[in-house]
Length: 434
Image: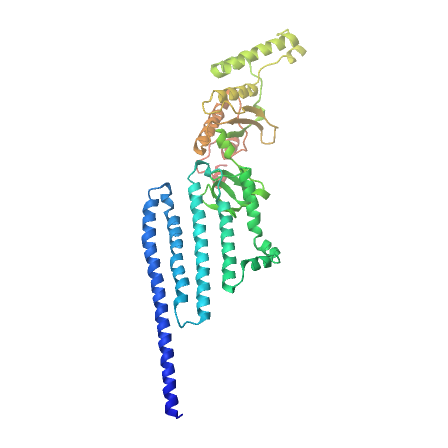
């Protein structure tokens, strides 16, 4: 055979190869065009009608999650077309068909996993519309479910790509259990903590919690698997690891809000040198206070009985005079504070109400007021507390008492020269007045 004949045969064979290659390439392009058109048409026929349907339901604010769910489900259609159509194209290498089909199957698994994740999120959104959702959130469990879904999807995808059974991969996971426990250590701890928090009803969305060691003091705005977000009163947000709420202590003010009142626990530091007995004239002058009259009547009877038994001779001197009991300005003021709080419309009747003396200190005698307001609103609570102490501080001189405080500039100026300092008092001004 001549060289010319051999050349003609080679050219003919190359022409056959080019024709088969071009035919397969055109069929492949057509397949992907059909898959793309099917994807567009599916989304066109499903996404917009579903959006209009969801807009009429209570889940209208969660339309984004519904749209994502529909989009992910619609992506299955082109993947199925590619999976079935690639095998119908002639002149393609068998290895290429196998690889494309494996990728298509893996894509279908991934798409279904993402759709199932969207469905779980949608279920959480629907649950949050219920009144009890704030007290019993399920977001942590939803996240656990999503982790399980994507873990199973990853296992199936790897099995599809390597052409092995998922059972074989699962049998190999036993050897990697220790590694997996290290990788998912925080997730496991958070899951256990979430179960304990929910079963014991320790934290709800909207609770005011206080955790000074983590700089958290505010309202819980989100409870997730790994973290709980707390919006502090300065509007910053602190992310607290869920497990920390089990291993460390924190304060939850929810029960205070449910009870309906907030505690006032504050002391007036009285100057102990101003405590004294009341003379009969001073005692009678205090009858001007209407709320004191029941106390004074009971006190008069108590003192009359005591003095009749232990000091019958009112005019006697010496031992008999020492044995007489007289009312004190401190005790009368304590009775006045208690009567004032009992009569106050913003002080709760059902809560504990105490007016008690604490141990004397170098800063004075603490007279503690312990009671509860009728509201838990912060602004109203501070206003009620301020109103009570404004009145008590202003009324103290009527009982011959005064508060203890360290001497200031006005006290020193009065002691040294009896002159009142200027409003802009400073050290240099004080020295210039001497």
